[in-house]
Length: 444
Image 1 (cartoon, one colour):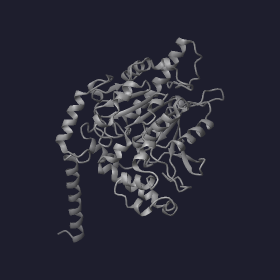
Image 2: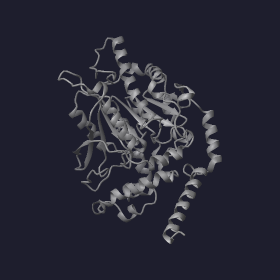
Image 3: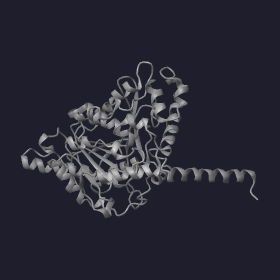
Image 4: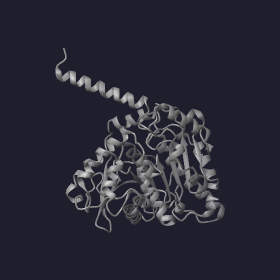
C-alpha cells in the first residue's frame, strides 16, 4: 500500500506527464491552432523555399543560404558547402523541436568554465560585466606566442535578453578558446550576478552599454579583430548595435543563432510555456534582489506579479511617459538595418517553436536586398539547439566558426587580387577576419 504522501507524488507525476503530452501532441507550445494549423504552415513554407541549397539531404535536410548575390555570397556558399564539420550525419530527434526544447531545459548543467570577471562602469554610473574564458588551448592556438606574433581574435558572446547564459553558449566559448580565440561573455547590468548600481536596466534594443563594452574590448586588444555571436532574444541587442553603429561598429563580422527579428510581435505572440515560464522565473528571481532600488523607478509589485514576458517588459520600461508603441519604435532590432555595414550570418531553423513560423517571423526581403545579411536556414534544429550526434556537438556552432574562417579566407584572396596589403594572420588553420572597413566591391 502506498502512503498518502506517496499517492500524492504519483498523482502529481501523472498529472505532469499528462499535461506535457497535451502540450506536445496538441502543438500548444507554439502558435495556437493545433496540429492542423502547424501542418498548413509547413506546407506554405515548403512552397516558399528560397535560397541556394548548400548541404545534401543526408546532412541536415537541405540547408539553404538566402542572400543577395555577390562575390562574398558565392564564396560563403562554396565554403559552407565543402565544410566537413557541417556534415555530421543525422540529428537526434529530427522532427521533435519541442522535445529538444524540453531536453535543453532538463539537461544537467556541465561544469562551468573558468572565467575571469571584469566590471565595466558605463557613463551613467551603471555596471556591466565581462567574463573572459581562461584555460588550455589546443591545436593552432596552443603554441607559445611571441611578441611579434599576430594577436588572437576576440569572440564576444551575447546571451539572451533575460541574461541567462545557457550551456550552449558556454560550449561555443570553450570551442573558440580551443581554436585560439579570446572568448568573452557580455553580461547586462543586473544580469548573471552583475550588480545593479543604478535603478535602471537595459531596454531590449538599447545598445548603449554594449557600445561601451565593445570600446573597452578594442582598447584592451587594439590589434585583434573583434567578432560577435548572439543567441536567441539576445540577437536583438546585437542587431540594434550594428544598425546604430553602421561602419563604426568596430566589428569584423557577426553571427546570430536563432535570432528574434521582430521583437514586438514576438512579445505579443503566445510564446511556448516551457520557454517563457523558466525565463520569467529567472528574471523575477534576479530582479527581486534589487526591489528596493527599483522601487524608485518602477512599480515593483506589478513587476514581480507579471505573468508573461510582455507584462514584465511593460512594467520595467513602459510608464506614464513611454507607451508600448513608443518603446518599440526605439527598441526594434531591425529599425536601422539599412545602416549595417559588416556581414551578419543568421542561423535559423524552420521548426523553431520559440521564434514562430518562418512565413511570419523571417524578414526574407532583408536578406534578398542587403548585401550584408545572410540567412542560413535549416528545416530542423529547434531553438538554439541544432544538436549533432556526439557529446556536446552543435551544428550551429560549427557553422558560425566556419563562416568566420571563410570571411578571413575571402579577404585574403581579394587583397591579393587587388594588391592591397594583407592584414596580419592569426597563424594556423584559422585565418584572420577583416580589421578594417569593408570594401563595397566585396558585396557586389
